[in-house]
Length: 469
Image 1: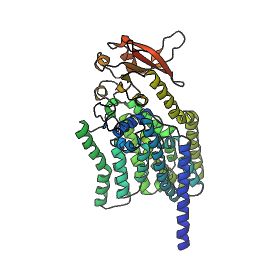
Image 2: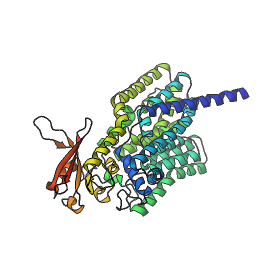
Image 3: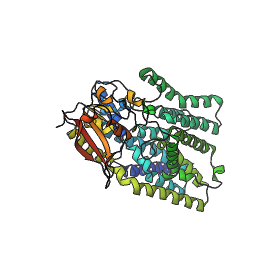
Image 4: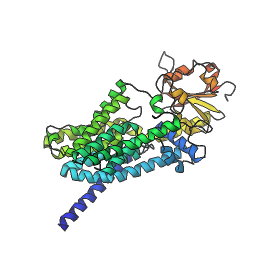
């Protein structure tokens, strides 16, 4: 018995190491990825580090401009060097958290499947571009991803991890509730244990909503109003989650669903509920399915359980589909994913030069714009501005009032433009940018320079005539 126990321990350790190596490889293929919203959190953390309080603009109002309430406080100790530095540290901590979570995930994978199926599980983990990219994106997703793995542990600790993940990402609340209660039911826990699991899964998010309502006047994040979406976008997003992202393809099985343990059925139901929620909220504007990433580890474990009880041909078909999805993502998006941060650094440097001497600059992509200087940023998308957030339109099509530029005393604009085709004039990429040029006072602005974007048009910097260099 001792020898068997030692063998199991050694097998568990080797699977944990394999999980770490797989996650590390995935992050290495995506290092350099980030998104503009990460710099929004970084700028709020910067304001906190400088003693200006929880706000986006120095001297501006305290505003709930990032969805995960409190995330900026975690970044503040690393943010005195500016938003970019804060995001870099967030990427490092996200990577470390994902490595630790992947060790546990690898051990689980080793228990669920064996032989070639186990190798397939670790390959899926290593080749998942969404998992690798979002772990190092510099947002809260690395932390939420680690909590998503912890949520798979049956019992109170797993339910608490699910609840903390949902507190950071409100769209995860139904998933957390269904997963925690479902696992308690699947393991035939008593009624008290089921109630405890449900309370731990939902309670943290309710407390955050209450706090947000007291501090900011609304129980939901400002982003809900600033970035409304629609059912069509939600359906496209769900298609990506189920097909293009890859992990859910491991669920294609014939008859195997009846032979896997009940607890994995609870994980599967929770994922299905989460997909429905993503359809309802309209998905997300960021690439690589950020809102689904925290639940992908559970999806992979369910796929491993299905593979263990499936026949050879079924697993071959599944392996081909998974490999094809991973290859397509890496081929189509891999190089661009790794280049995001370096390209953004170039934008920041160019914007800093062209905006020198301005005091109040308006634009949509306020993340990198806010990292370019300590200027007051006037947010045309409303992500950091409650007045704009509640205006009609999406975050790139807000219907700004006619006196907006004058009332906000904007002295510089950063607008995005598609290049002119032969015989045509250049057009603005965002509807709100086109509207800005029709507002009162817009005729006083003149272009002073452009910032090219790789294959995606260019930014145009405009200054008021009296202030243009």
